[in-house]
Length: 120
Image 1 (cartoon, rainbow, N blue to C red):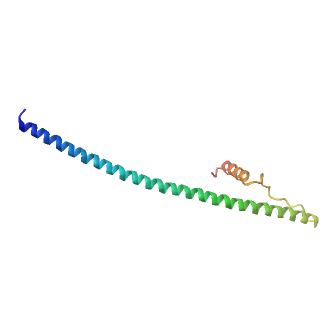
Image 2: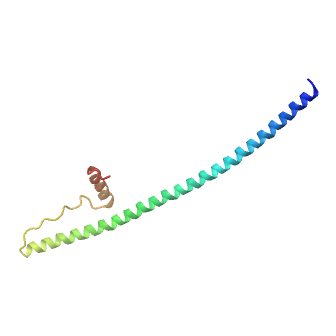
Image 3: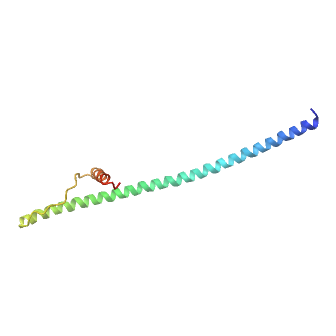
């Protein structure tokens, strides 16, 4: 082989090595950038999930307050119905009582009811 040919091959190999190093550096940089973007997206979606759970918790706390209010109001109506009957009024029908007293059972019952009506 002629010395010029060997020299050109060496230069070509050197240039290929430089190009591969540049490609590797670019790949590494893009990998870091993509990882950082994915981490930001992950963190944002995680915060959104945390907010969803907080809103669910708030609704359950509101539900608990409403259940207590319902039970107190229902007891008041029962008492009022008895007094009305003692005062000679006709027997006035009450709304159906809740089939359960504790929150988890009432929520489960309402979920079944709403599912049965096709609302959820």
